[in-house]
Figure 1: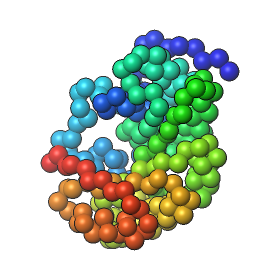
Figure 2: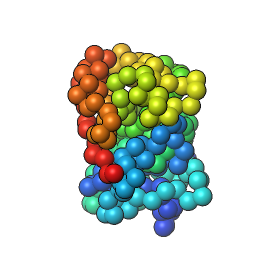
Figure 3: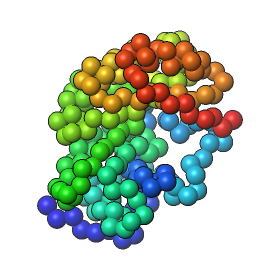
Length: 216
């Protein structure tokens, strides 16, 4: 397959934190969007060049591959890692995500690229998702949890029924059992009990835990 270079890159498709590139696959989230969970005054750093995807568009794998490779031609960005994140949940566009990974590997055979996915983990088919990611050599995932109990999680993370607190817990356990590098993130918003979430993550077998700031 031939990937044509795009110039300029479609708005909202890529952004960066330091030298690390991030891909936005959708503006749509399940439950409370990760960006919204950071508080009403939270903004991505201006230097990141983050914007929402135009008109709620969903980019194609060809667009992403061409855009990433174009930026990787410079020395400005880290060329060995890529994170699927953005305003929405990238796992809602899983086929595009997998096609992108495959295409980037094909067009960069000399690079040992590591891929990570940021998600709310509100999916009822974690075994299938895990299997598909694993078969494409994606082994790192970050899951936003924020609360250590069903009442608080369901109240504040707004999972649409029948998805709930147990859904995300089962998602996390599935990826831990499959020996993924699992990171749990928690926003210190004054409502959650950060240390209890940390301990709950450890009970599920997660060793990497990150606390996110809140902007009231």
